[in-house]
Length: 64
Picture 1 (cartoon, rainbow, N blue to C red):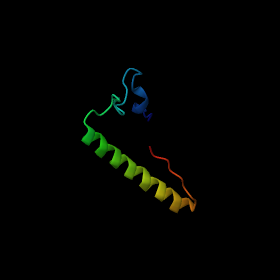
Picture 2 (cartoon, one colour; picture 1 turned 30 degrees about the vertical axis):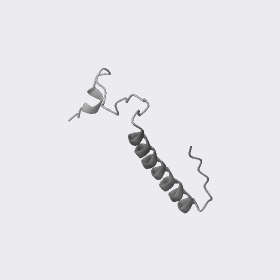
Picture 3 (cartoon, rainbow, N blue to C red; picture 1 turned 60 degrees about the horizontal axis):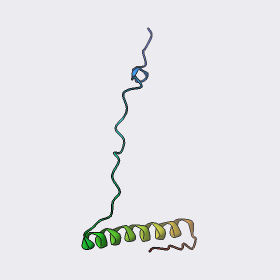
Picture 4 (spheres, one colour; picture 1 turned 135 degrees about the vertical axis):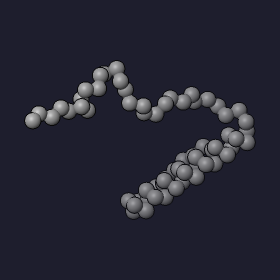
C-alpha cells in the first residue's frame, strides 16, 4: 500500500502566516515615548546581565 505525502501538496501560492510588517514611526507623545524607552532599556539590561552570567564574561552596554 502506497502512502501519499500530503505536506508536499501545498501549492507555492499558499504561504504561511508569519509575522506581519509594522510601520516604524516616531512616538509623538512624550510620556508614551519615555515609557517605551524605559521598558526597552530594562529588557536590554536584563539580557546583558543574563549573558554575563551565562558566559561568565564582562558585558558593556551603551544606551542613548
